[in-house]
Amino acid sequence: MANPLRYFYEAKQKEMAAQIWDLASSKSTFYSTICSINQKRFLTSDARRVLHAKDWCTYWRQDGEPENNDAVNRELGHPNGYYSGECIAEVEHFYVAAFMEIAIGPGLTQIGVVGWETFDITLKRPLMEAYKAHDDGRNVSEAFFGGFHGGLQAWFNSIKWNYGQVARAQSGLAFGAEILEGRPILLPVDPAVALAEATVKLRDAINFIEKVRSEPLPTKLPSFDKAPIGTCPIPYKPATPDKEFKLDYNDPKRRSLSAVSMAVYQTFDLWPLIWWHNPSLAANPNKLKPLTAVRYRDLSTYTQTEIKLAKDTAPTWKNYAL
Image (cartoon, rainbow, N blue to C red; front, side, top):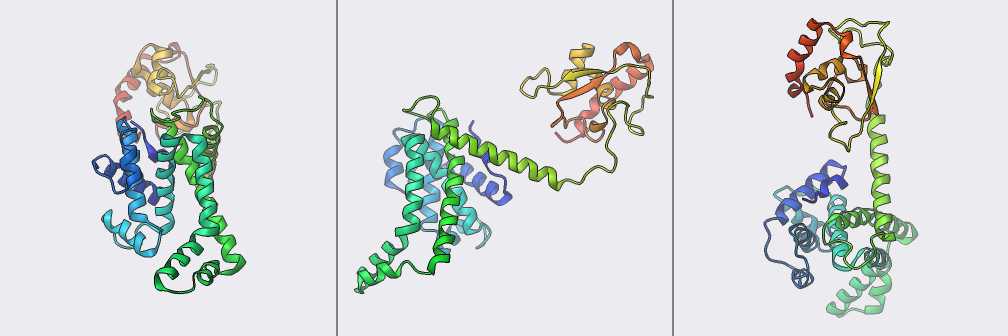
């Protein structure tokens, strides 16, 4: 099952994306003609869900005016302002790009997104003003040129805003490429998908760095050459050599303490011996990331009493957050 939430990090955006993704799973009709026409081409459940998510977002957000944002919040069961206009725009651009990736392919999606944002910056508002003037019987040319209001700074701010949405579209593009019907007519290694995936990975890296920076440093960094004092119920033995076990989070046999225990001790139940022997795991045995390896001692260096203590402790992993 495709999961769009991994592409969002801000809490409100993630919450809204989840609401719409859930909502899309129960939809059967469409607001827009383009989605109604494309439904025959979107065959898998994930692709059709993207189709409904895009359809819902675009219909209720409209042009992103305050009343449209209020409508989005109302339809999702929230008071006005619960999801900001920026939040709503971010989520809509994500689902629109995912829809376009499946419908027309990643290369054309890139051209379409950049082209639309460029149109939105330079011509959308003047054209809307011109149409309104025509309906009101006012001077169309005057309304059109008056649509470029706000001066150079306002125009520059608009550029920053619109092309900022292109970055969100990269995430939607990468998400669409994950779905079975993504990349429908292009080569397996498409430059547009590569750019989208690189953008997502860059944001992943930035988010990780910001998370690390926000966490307080430990008052005392644990030493790798001895067991953690005060947390290990088994006495440290200075003369006993340590061994190292490499972790691999993509391999079920190398990504948990119980898996390491099975590999080195031939039983899952002795994982506490490894937990107690690695200072950085003192707080939670289920949180191995971002460690690349753990250290352990040969089973022969432990007494029967110590081994029994480990087995008695083994079920407690359920008491810690996963």
